[in-house]
Amino acid sequence: MEDAARLLQLVVNGAAAGCIYGLIALGFVLIYKATEMVNFAQGDIMMLGGFVAYSLIAHYGLNYWVGALLAIAITAAFGFALDAVILRRVIGQPQFAVVMLTLGLGFIFRAGAGIGWGYDSVGFNTPFTNKTATIGQLVLGQDNLSIIVGTVLLCGVLYVFFSKTRLGVAMQASSQNQLAAYYMGIPVRTVFSLIWAISAGVAAVAGILLSPVSMIDVNMGFLGIKAFAAAVIGGFGSIPGSLVGGVVVGIVEQLAGYYLPAGFQEVTSNVVLLAMLILRPQGLFAELSGKRV
Amino acid sequence: MTEPLLRVNAIETFYGPIQAIRGVSIEVAPRQMVTVLGANGAGKTTVLRTISGVLNPERGQIVFEGRDIANMAPDQVMRMGICHVPEGRETFPFLTVRENLMMGAYTRRDPAGVVADLELCYTYFPRLQERQDQRAGLLSGGEQQMLAISRALMGKPKLLLLDEPSLGLSPLLVQQIFGIIRRINEEQGVAILLVEQNAHIALKTADYGYVLEVGRVVIEDQCAMLIHRDDIKEFYLGQKEAGVRGQRRWKRKREWN
Image 1 (cartoon, each protein chain N blue to C red):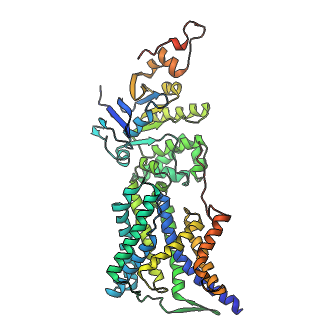
Image 2 (image 1 turned 180 degrees about the vertical axis):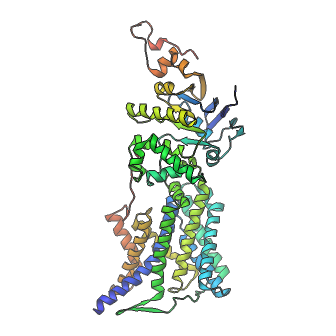
Image 3 (image 1 turned 60 degrees about the vertical axis):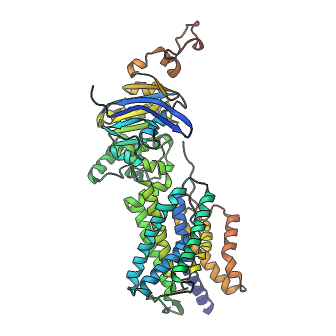
């Protein structure tokens, strides 16, 4: 019984970490589907979102919820500007140029954050910090639960947005066929910048949800590497896949950390990724369709 | 002579260093149906893409309702009232048929009119109504063509640009679709600029025709006249006068050369 409870606790903690990976992976996938660019700075945008929230809440003393919403909005605006000013110019260039550009942007963001906020880990008080919820024999951290609940809510909102609103469907349409979207009168460039804004906003949510669990520091963006594995496991291009992939990576990591010797935890995401690429290279949720004549 | 709806005046369009259009002039009057014929590589599709703003002409004007639209972006051109049905359908494969149609009405702000036009599309193409909740990528080629035409109609165009609607369809389906295109033109009063390789059906359906060869208009006339010209019959309709052994096709010259 105790073993079962422990296992469940590990799974919940893993799922919480996995939700963070999943949210970053979601940002990768949204941008990739729309513009066929892989944004390697996604993790660093999460870091920026976390720092902005830290400034607003710990420094300017805003209420947690107000500060969080404002930080999400600011990061989203930053994502919009990033595309409108910089990344729009490399559409159509070789993939390698995009990879170098976004990797470089990641470096710049880390350096900029270091200059602005310093290299020490920081944190701020949230309503979930150091609180627990007891369900039967289970003792779960509210911080972890808040990550899971927050991710589920965010996914619900995004699902409704993408499938029910005019702009959301137009975003899908622009991702699927750019030229036809232009012919429909959809301002495709603005739509793509808005997709960048959503990705950055989602990353900011991840950063804010993560802050009670692990501190905010300049290098937290390296989580993006595990999130990348999550996106590939999910079938790079599938939105539910990226979240499931994230949760898989998170849970496997937790279990490996508990049951396997020290050191295994760090490599498990890559082991899962390799296994996936060998067994099912198209990913868990591949969307395949041939063009008909 | 009334002012035409669309006047394309001596446009020249380049793909990089290659000149695809060498001074083409075309006019479409309100409610008129005009066709542009030509072989592969004659520049037909390029003319349409230049009109809809995907390509910008190096020289020449494109005047639509008195405004020069030559250097506008494609989404602005669409907002002027020109809807383009591209070659190869180009539907949104993962959206349902209905969502595809609603995307055609993306720029409109009159929900009642949109619903009415959706019904209109379903009366022209009942097959689309049967399949309205299916993903467009799962439709057959003919159904996708119907969807592409309907999607453009949803934008309430004043001018419809149709690029090779017969591509890859069975002869029977081509007959049906061209019949409906003609009805759309007459019943809705939409002017149509139709680009086709299938000269036979295009000349029978349209009012006025242009023949394009290597980026130039070589001949233009009423379709009823074009269809009886010997050179058109020979080179575009593939007809030979039976029994005249002395006049084999390689001895005949195109009259416009």
